[in-house]
Length: 189
Image (cartoon, rainbow, N blue to C red; front, side, top):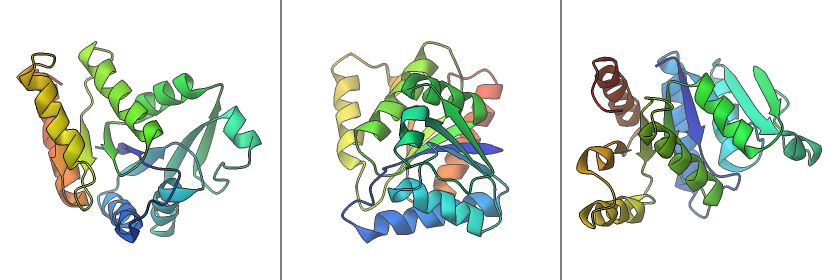
């Protein structure tokens, strides 16, 4: 894994542990020489993870729609900031730039990005793995719901197993590395 796309909130969230985990993920990424690809914002957890990567000496690549640049929410101190026309182009560019995806806590934007990455994987547009980085049970409800979707016959067991869950940054990266290796050996990803 050379570049990891991190999906997360443009807000800080109610639990200070969310920001702590964003910083921990950034430090683990830099320790492993993994660059950050993210939505390009300076606010919320997005800003925390980008700042922490940069402060630790890593590289941070942002991808942001022009409308958000105009609203002055773009992070101007990144290694590189890609400005795109809209959200669809943002997600496509982030997918192009990364080797895998991890989701920290976030709202509908984070969910949208996660599910689109998973859908594109299911359609064969990419074979990159994705993982939920669970912080104080934030993703537990979604994990259980996806079990329900699979049990109801709308998601195969193999597809369900693609949605990885980890409790630490090191575990998340290890699980993503293992899934990426499995993909290169022809396993479903």
